[in-house]
Length: 316
Image (tube, rainbow, N blue to C red; front, side, top):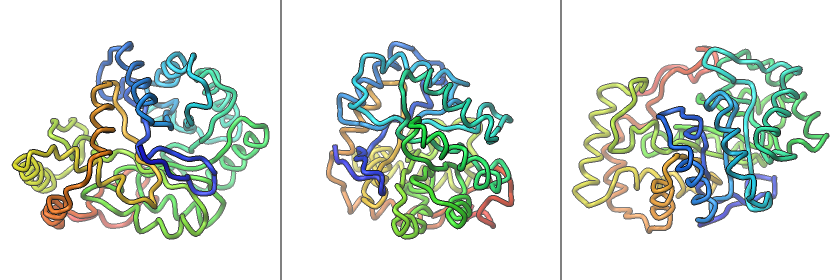
């Protein structure tokens, strides 16, 4: 497993990190023992950052992680969670809720401190509040030693630019924007590097789109996007390669993006992803895949408040 220094934090993160959203049964019913084993497998294989949120399973992910990590030495892993998003329509980024949320997360997770705390999906709210109220409130908790580094997470690229223009961040977490078919995060990297901000990417499979699995009903990919991705998956299969393998490999190939978060409550998936990460990339096949995807490169959709998004929707 390769390790990269996360911005100016001094922390070295594994190129692949473990996302614990699935431990909250966000995508399917889980076997709790299997889910706990998936975390241990990830740690045993060298993954050293775990990402969660009180939103995942409405607290279940944090509680289950706390139980799973109870006997694991704290120095063996870095731990991050989020605040502000607590249910599908429920957001609260107030100063009052910040301290309460951090304390609840610390209790659930069974730890005295968090390595990373993120404002979760800020595109759904008035982002002025994030800059003027939420982040200053988190910095107060940072001074108390409860959190080490502070950042924001979400889908549109515009949210990161907005916050960075108005305050300092230690890290950012972007999802679905550094994959085989969308590399919009790459355009933001020079600014992040200039500011010393750690760059975390998540969801290299774009909600199963870049896999051979059936898409969930909520997926927003257009028919054209689905058709072209299917063409790519078929090409990869002809070469004896799973499109998901290419997705993992591509997502960690850019060393300016320090880690890619991917998660599963299935330990066999975790083993497979680490194996893929260690394999050399078939660049001839990769280039052929990227060529097919060009017509839908940087396709995206609107998430949260329209004014917090990136303008016109990408090619459909």
